[in-house]
Length: 121
Image 1 (cartoon, rainbow, N blue to C red):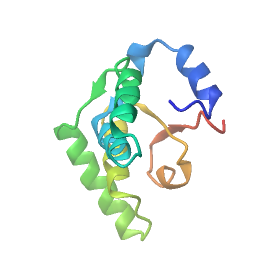
Image 2: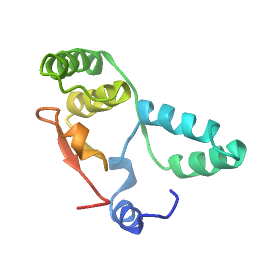
Image 3: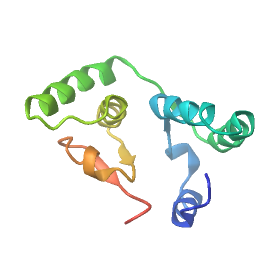
Image 4: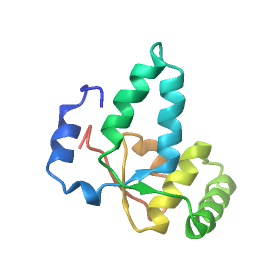
């Protein structure tokens, strides 16, 4: 969105956009970001224009069940991840999707989660 990683834009442009989903949890994290920016209205407008191209992935019962499983598993091993990241990972697992993230260090702790890092392939 901010142009710092042109490979991300190139990868997105090579895919059919109806195959790329935006998690409602990620939208919440982005909303927090624009509310904390120095120009919230402008930042919100730019982010929303970009995000308008992607269908949303909402939290559902399957996601909630997977969330409980992975949170218990990682906490019992003493290797938890961020609270929002539990939900994001659960959505990807529940819907058998690939999670695209630069945060492979934390998400890599989630067993069975398929990851792609478009910034550092």
